[in-house]
Image (cartoon, rainbow, N blue to C red; front, side, top):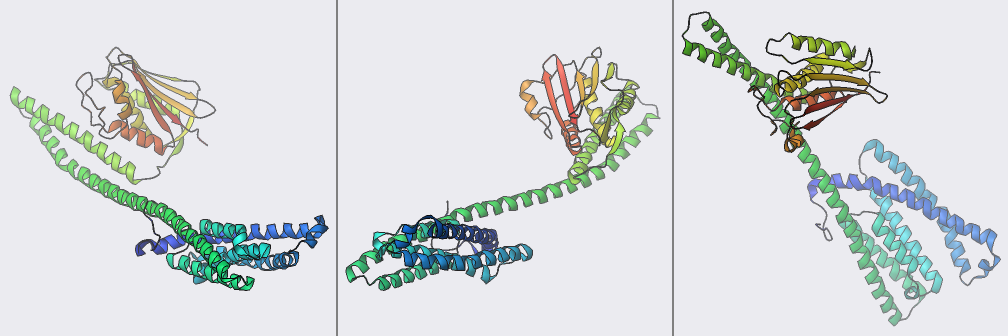
Length: 443
């Protein structure tokens, strides 16, 4: 930890740090003043009601006077600190009055401890408990800049010296007391600066984290903009290439040319799929919320499954089951269809044509669960932690050679989370996979 015993933190952060700790200082004055006032009121009650013997104590008159002084002065610190707390919260600005109040209250506490110690024995060296407690409390609960700490140390030493002259101690006792005071004030100075350094490092680390987060957000936003622009601009040339291949198919071609045209079309289709995924990622990253509407979920899933049954290359049986005839959820139709399409596509991609795919919907008191389950290859255990990452290591070819962009499941998770839901996967190799989506019920 970097220490600031004889200096303040860098000027760049000083104003922010003062704002950071000044409110805490003012609150500390307010709370400490209340406690100090309450202790003196309790002591006054002792003097008044509990024991007549207290009034015959050797130093009772002095304690009695200081007790009344504390009861009279302390409420002013309570009221002023409360007012300044409200003022700081309204204006968010630091004034010299804030620092002055904290320093005055610190001097007030230290003076109170010193006076109490002197009253007890008329020789500070013999009983410095209350003085030590006051110095220790001030050094721990308040934060001061280097100049303020130094000024407070000098003022305290002046007060202590004045107290020695008041006690009329001889030169030897004066020297002993001054040495003791020097040790105490050195401890006060270094404890105060250590507390300042400790909280300063905490503040600087928070600032560094905020700055890094801002840079990351800025870079992420720029990346998404570039990603969206690049992906959008690529659609036109790829679309043009695909159109040319369609025109070429109208003419008579030899076998080699036909194979080349087929490869170009397949590549264009693959490229367009990647571009669409990239655009979807950019759109999801750039929008914090999505528009939803209350819809009956069973019917939506039936429509999606029907569309899959009409695809020529899909032979798998897709079965929908639900524990309720009607289940309502707040969803974005277009995006949630993409989620189910992606999960069914993956299920078919890694299943034999004879394997069925199940879509199960369950409504309970806690919410709605949509499960897409297959009985195909399953996912290797080492891939499961990476299954929802972008450009995931878990991306692999399907049974019939289907390629993966590594973006599909990351998009699925994005969309589910924007629906205030969660998605999880359970899988066992050669036995299949189950993707479960938890959604809140529609209000």
